[in-house]
Image (cartoon, rainbow, N blue to C red; front, side, top):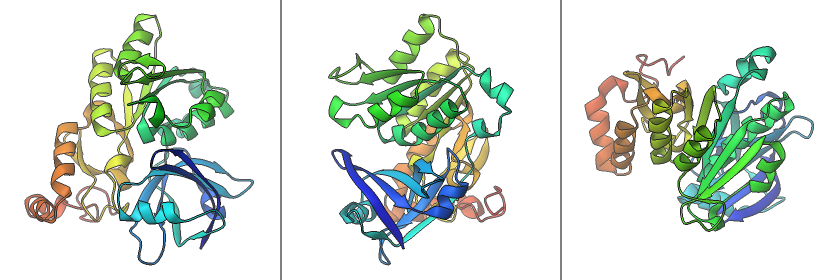
Length: 295
């Protein structure tokens, strides 16, 4: 059992929790995720790690209520306990594998959309601890749906806010902010985009035109977090991959976003899942031996 030390409502239906999980906190790195189960009857929920403290043995998660599992998790209060908190899982950010001198030379842009701000934060914080100041764009539909602004201000080199309706920050999409920065003379070695699939698709479309290498995190399409359910099957550079076992980060310019989004719609129904399983055969899940998901 894992004790909830802090619970905070960030905005409508989006919660932050600090959880006592010593072993996870001891070994996790930015970009990785945990699988959470509220109680014995709860669903397995993969959640990207938002923050961690090795000294205090805590891990911070941020989640939005989108189904029964996240509703049950949101019903838990400070001082209560989460049944399962498994991790760290997935591959850490590629940035964590760079040599200090190579990292110091990087000009990095992060683009966060909605709840995707949560997995962006630990990477930006980790970079600041290494002496690297990254630029960050946060996009939201409206001011009321913006999360973690104050936390991000403390770690970002420059923070740019954009809202679809213009209620706060710049009026427009995150792609508009990218264009403005580049037009103003900003140069980036890499862009890291995390958010809704449609947002990442158009960010990658733009950065490809601008010749900026781009990494995306496909955690939004994960379901069981083990590669066995087939939900996060995606084509990257013509090869079958699974976000939970091969990622969650991939070269955004190689991801087939249209195929991935179409699969998401099909996967929502029992009939659609049966169709995908029959159509994709042995490559339907990550334990097939064909995609590397079993290693």
